[in-house]
Image (cartoon, rainbow, N blue to C red):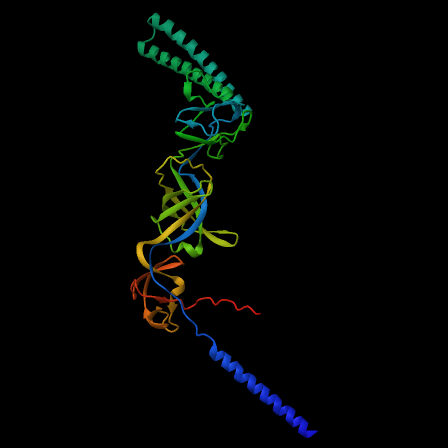
Length: 370
């Protein structure tokens, strides 16, 4: 019985030992790893960051009334091209009761004073005609009478302005006629006929009757993340891509970077603005969403390698590549790198165009079982 167990154990040892020898033999028969190589190429490399935003007019003017009332007529609509001074709307005044009563009282007071001065003037004239008073005294009474007459007419005009918004002699300066203050395109007319509007004054912005802007001068207005704002500066070139206009890019210049960020959805965003340099007649509608590629650096026609070919020394962190010096033989060469776009990187020195660079991190093909 003991002999049988011993024989079985010996057979197991022999089988295991034989299997190990076979595995090592098969391992030695495997083909050695063959590394592929690539050469440098000539590329134009652009390093950039992207900001999201929209296209808006450089200067948008809001036309507001200087008197409160009801919109009686509107003479424009969105999309119209208008000039400075063109009529936009007409307002029917709804007078303020207190102001109307004060103006009416002022007219009555002025009329009382005028009647009194007229009587005084007539008496002084009779005395002057009889030679009782001097010419100087009569001239004083004449001036006072004319001033009272003028005050009465002014009180009447003020009463008409309070009651109707206009009066005889104002012409195009009437408060009820709203005119454009600039030349440009009407972007929107947020009011309709019959709407009540409030005048613009020191205590109220007033109701916007129309928004007018020069659509020939547009800007990009957007935001960049706090992680990118340190990389950009004024006067950098921008490439604007408008979502609604396919296969078209517009050049711009970065004019403004906000000195203070604002929190949006948990992240700090900084506002930027860039003036578009339109060289064609493409019409860009105000408010269209757009992306701006901020060009941080650009090099034309330089020797470049793929970023994946670059290795870094674990101690010095200096970049190097492995250059083929024979059949599957490579040597390390330090390289000086330049601008990178994340895919390709500029190589300033360290290798030649003809050098073959080892693809050191090539992906192995998966092994499929039988």
